[in-house]
Length: 355
Image (cartoon, helix red, strand yellow):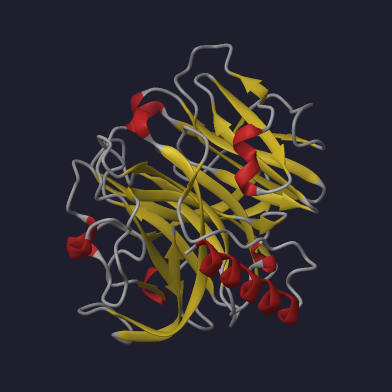
């Protein structure tokens, strides 16, 4: 078995080199789940040969740096920001690099007052500004936000409430004129309305949205569905149709089930449940500079990180770990829908995830 794994890694290395990807630093990870940090909501980017992660640490935010995703667990943890005003725990910090500055977006607050904030620095592990509340349109409960640029326009994507009560969490988009300045309206692009994403609710949940661009240049938002307190937690995909308007909800096509999950009954046809972990979710695509313009092409597997609970362990928030996994693009995949405007089907790239 060990010899087969070594031969498999050698084959992948040859394929990467042939594709010109080995030199730019994409890293292949083993197929087996690689457990690392006991935490939730990983966010990891690559800058040169350095992998930079951020995580919540109670009332603050910590950053680690290492030469590979697997080595982050042994890296020094540096706290870069602390809430000195007791406003509630920090949720899901997300790090990006834009214009030579690092920006960390995170949610802060208690109950319905939870909102998204941002800090920035020219260095990933220190010198951050004071927190600034992001003035998202409508000023509603907002978590899991991330900045990205698509077709020359900055966007912000997050999970939030339509109103002031905890009925369901939707995925929203808004334009940004700078990394700290939203402009215009917010646009809902996904709501948890499919049976497979309503197995565990109260509220029903779409959260942890992560943008990526497929080999055809189309935008995807991969998100987490079902309650994060349950092993029904899973990853699903939103694919913007070719030439579609990101602000128009019916230009988005949703996968017909989970693409990465631990329960066969909710998986999209042709996708298999996990072998080693339960409830994988709230992932991060490990991209150069965190920029979707550097999204990997079709070909071998590429790294991602996600949180999950090891099989055989009670599924609780305190039992979540970061795992290093891989993903690849899966072509000619049809997403189907009914009783909504526009064509009922859309065929294009989807994703396969591996522990």
